[in-house]
Each structure stands twice: as C-alpha cells, then as structure tokens.
Length: 482
Image (cartoon, rainbow, N blue to C red):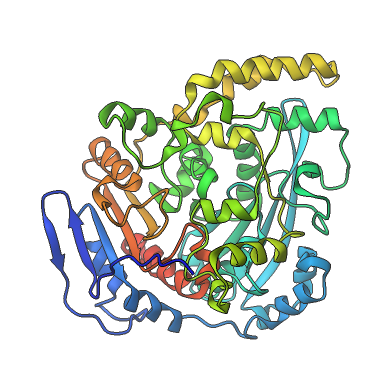
C-alpha cells in the first residue's frame, strides 16, 4: 500500500493567513449537552478555518446508534442482485427498527418540452426534537445516487441513516442516475433512466444528455422539497451538485426556507468564483477543473464513464476506505469497490455536470452549437427551443453571493480537490470562503477541516462519525432558535 500519511493535529486548532496556529483547550468526548463540544468551539472562532482533530472526530461515533444496528436494510441489500434493492421496500420496514419513517417519492415534471423523473428517499426521524432543526436535503454528485448516502460499502449502514436518528433527511438522486434493479450493462453502454418506467431511444437519450442543465435539476429538486418537506432546510449538494444550494437561494420559496444558511460537504462554491481566482491567482495548482484542454471535453451528448482506475487517480481511495482496511492496496481496493457497486451505481456522468461546475464558461458557444447539432440530427420532434436551454446554460456562473448569514463548509483533510493539507491557505474552500466574506462582512463564514486521512467520499469511509459531526454542525448553525 502506498504511504499517504499527512501530519495531523492532536488538538482542535485554527489557522488563518498571517495569524499562525491558535490552540484550543484539550477536549473530552463530545456530547450533545456539553458546553465544550469541539465542533462548537471550532466553529465559534471567527477565523479562516478550523481543524477538528482525529480524536475528537472519532468521538462523535459514540453519539449515534441505529435501533436495529442497520440489519434491516443490510438484509434487503444482501437479498438483492448486486445490492440494488428497491427503495420502496424500505417503506415496509417498521420505523421503530430504523429510527425513522422511510418513504420513497418520484416526481415527474416537465422541462424543455420533455418529462423528467427525480427521486427522493425521505427519512422522517422519530426523534421528537427533529422538527426543531432544518431538513437535511442531500443531493448526489456525478455517477452515483442515493445508495451512496443510505448505504456504505460492504452493505453497511450509511451516513444518512445515522443523521436520521436526530434530524429529518431527504436523499435526492438527480434525474437519470437511479434505475430500479440497477444496471448490468458495461458502463459505456448504460443509458440514464430519465424516466423510470420507460426505455428511451438512442436519439432521445442523446438529446436529454445534451440539455441536462443545473436549472433542469433545480426544478425537480424544488418540487420534491416543497411537496414532501416542511419548515427550514439545508441543501447539501455533494461534488458536482454543490451549486444547487446557491441556485436554490435565488428561488423565493426555497430562499425563505434556507433562512440564510449554507452547509457544504465537498461542495465548493458558485462556479463564477473559479474565474475570479484565475485572475487573482494565475497559475494556481488546486482545483484544476478549469485547466482541461478542449480536447478533453467530449461532445455534450456523450456520457463520460467512471472507472476503478479513476478512483485512485482522483484520490477517492485512501487509508480509511473499507476495502483498504481489508489489507488491499489502493488499486485492488478500487477495483473491489467498483465491482461491489457495479450494479447499484450508474458510473456515467453527463458532460454538462462538469462544464457547469467548472471554469470553462468559454465553452458555452461550443455547447450551444452541439445542442443545435444533435437537435437537427434527430429532427427535434419534441419542439425543444434552443433559446430556452441557452438561457439556462452556465447558470452556475451567474448566481448572487449575497443573502447568506451563516455558511459552513465541512472539508476532509485528504479531499485534494477542496483541501491541500501541505498548503492549506491555497485550498479551494479557503478562497471561496474569503470571497463570501468580502461580499458578506457581517455573516458567519466558517470552514471545518476534518484532520484525518479522509477523502472526498468520506461519507462512505466513516459514515457514523461524520454524521455525528454534521449533527453538531447543524446544531451550531441553528443555535439561535434552539
């Protein structure tokens, strides 16, 4: 196994440019009633970023437990080919066994003259205090779906199950990324399930891939939230879904329920900030999304396909990966992980997810021409108006940054797209937070760095402990109403 060790801190500490390291008093085991909770202390300091030590992080695993130890859903997964159990089966399990009432929703909605299906698995907590906190709306990034948050590798309980012991949760899968029974075809041959009850023609699939904008996803997300949750919300968009929380802030009905709060997990910021950084810090090495050459972007209708090798290349495999813990090296662990989730996960990604999440707004003209080309090639029997799509393209570059009062990014120390442990002041999240501080000088803007060898997919590595940290983070963010 390759040695990927990074120096860690024993105590919670806070760093900022020019201010050195400020150590906090030693902490005991975190509890929900203590006035010396490490997460609260770290977030309470108005500094550039704060580290939560590995010791304090791991202590949060003592805070949460599942009534049945997770066996009910584990049994479903183990009885289903490839682990792809039907989420509607979770509705039949007694809430007392789960600690929450599970309910599956499919919302079909029209956009760009076509219908789309977006799904949400709602976990309504049995905790009598849950309704005093915002709903946690978790949205997958590219090439995965709700399974990544409900279940951890080797069919173990996932992050959302632990969160739902305290708070209400809805796991949203973006249109196309879930299919009943999963996929058995090679990823290069898989088709996105934009409609769950229909197989699409190749022509229609190409068109849908080409117009899969964040605005389209946001419309479905909004319908799920407004119809199936009430009260305040926190939208946690992982990875390429990170911008959805900022787009939601521009929707009056969602803005009122966000109540000026943002919570990120590997989420980044509005894509517009990447352009700002390129001009402020030319040649920066972090977050190389904007550095891709034109030849590295496939046509907008052609899915990009994830592989096990990419897991390693993208630093998604680290020492906390459950398969690495079984004494596999990184390459073998990645392959085993990929094989175990081969059926449940789509392992494809629409190019627009990368394009709208990245800095290459200069490719907007290329994208428009490719959409026109595919519509002309198939004859456009749906009457899709290219002007409607063009108006929405790259909306992630035009969102407003004001309107927030409390913002927290939770970042894993080994998530190298978002954090550079060897040069933390150059990290992407630090730049984002500083830009928001300039726009919102009176807001609470915080970065909580988990100081252990956790990666971008830490919710799959230590889901129970991560849930405990997020519970305390949400409690800190809502402390004025508690």
